[in-house]
Length: 359
Ligand SMILES: C[S@@+](CC[C@H](N)C(=O)[O-])C[C@H]1O[C@@H](n2cnc3c(N)ncnc32)[C@H](O)[C@@H]1O
Image (tube, rainbow, N blue to C red; front, side, top):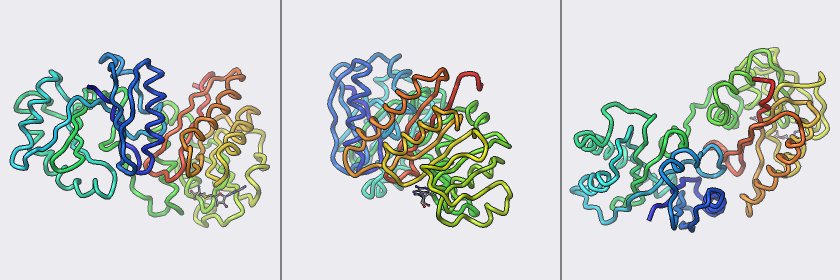
């Protein structure tokens, strides 16, 4: 039986499972979730799998919130012998008749999973050679072709899955690792950097983060998000009662306003980008973002929604639904994505980019 496999942050399995149920139903395929709490992935067996074309094009990771990676399981191998794990993998891959562009040997992003990390890195080398010898894998890495995921859940057990270039995350384990910039004032900076790099397309990135553009950062202190804007040569109104990093102020690109983010009005009539990382109720933040976008105070917005302990998928869905409904009444169209990023904690990052007439 084919199943959809989603990696996720440990502890987010139930939210991921609910999302997979909605996602598969939207595509008229049905199944059920299989997961244990804190295992870092959810498997979703389907009664009747969709066609290859639909799998390859329509289950876009970018349109989901909680999955870090989406792939399609075609074999489950257990009781693997430590003396030869490769032969059963080759046998299962042979039945697929697919030439893969890469093989990623992966493991759950959990404490247990980390024990498998070293083994997976080592095992990838002989496995790659064996797959190439049989011509199941391209000679050079080709990420425009399907990727073979060999997902170990124990030293003796793995799932074999396939992912497609138009729908998957380009990162192994679905994890975008970033180096913390030494001069950034907080680790939160990585959340916005990851959002800029992975949630926007090249055209949006170029347009929204252009030198000289104006931004407002609500809940800015100590300045990790402002740092990302400043390094892209933007001018920032940083709004927060806290203290802002002095080096950022010294750039001359930042004006600090010790005010309430919920009542703050921009210095000029409108700004290009509104960002917001205030720790507040998600529905309040989503409403505030909508107020700025609907009244044209901001062209685009990037913000975090802090998640409650329970009903997190429902909370995000409700907040985004009401924002979408407000934006739908405008003449402009918007592309909205929400992702639980690797650098996010109990929060998701949302990007709302105004499309018509600006590109
Ligand atoms: C998670 S921190 C922001 C971190 C920041 N994005 C960074 O990268 O350094 C949340 C900030 O929101 C601010 N904040 C919370 N409620 C606020 C409000 N109503 N108005 C302005 N700032 C607020 C807090 O003072 C705090 O500095």
